Image 1: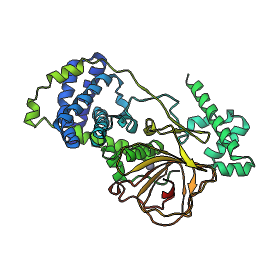
Image 2: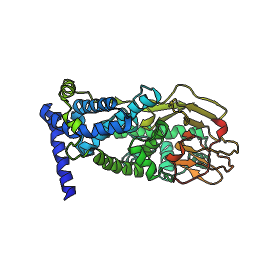
Image 3: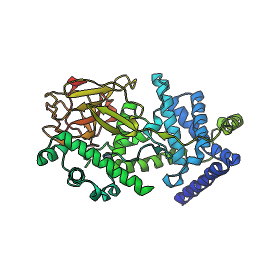
Image 4: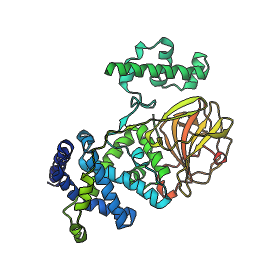
Length: 191
Length: 218
Ligand SMILES: [Zn+2]
């Protein structure tokens, strides 16, 4: 029963944010504002200890909701999760200012928002996807040997260097070249 | 395979935004490298958001009566924001380039300092006690045997290191509070993020492991 009510609420909020996103619907935004503002202010008072700062938090948070509604991605979570993320991140930065007198904005680095786009390929060395490995056979043999050793046999770079009788620097550079090549295959594949 | 994770209590504090910058970076970076913790944090985040924001009707009278019209007007006069493209956190040390988790984006300084195979980049977090830095140890590097008294967190970002007791892999989130003597070393070289003198209460209940990196080099 309660869960049903919650998902009803969540559905309604999703409708509202869509209306803001697609039509800059002021009434829908007003409804969201009414819905979230008491809680945001309460959170602000609790964390920041001042009514004035809590009002700043409210204004900043809801401004982001208004200006970025079109970037909200319903596949990634509920509206409340998105608004909470914006609020918590903003509050983190405000707290840094209050406590350490620092004007920095690190919140969104630490808790990335839904809509963040990677400038690179979105893949880092520690997260080799299966997709990437599909193209393994296309690699030149010397690079393939290293990439397979590291990612499929889980050998350390030092172990590989010893087994193959080559310097560790060579292992590193072949690995780097191999990974770059795999990524470029993947990018072409996507185009 | 990542074997060492932050405790659930630490993840929860992270989600709530209660950790200081130095620790937030450590947990965030671990989660970017660790699917298990990423999934946990995703769930905690949704649950905490629900708890914090899914409200019953407004009950505070002063708030209900407050006139928000001018704030609303002000907000709705703003244009839509463009989608931001965020730069990667890239760092270079000893001729090697590393792509770091997003949490490091705005923390990286220009300069490394160090002797021999050990290089350090100190972050300016403005925290009173905790000291945060990136630490790079070149291939074959070793830290002389030492003890450590304070709490210390090490997140292995790249490469390998081991000590007499354990072998660590990229992504491992290692909490140390031991006074044991040991001498950590790395075969292929490694890059770590470390926080020393992290406030104790944040790390209570986390598996205690031995300290791999000495106080000597901080
Ligand atoms: Zn983990």
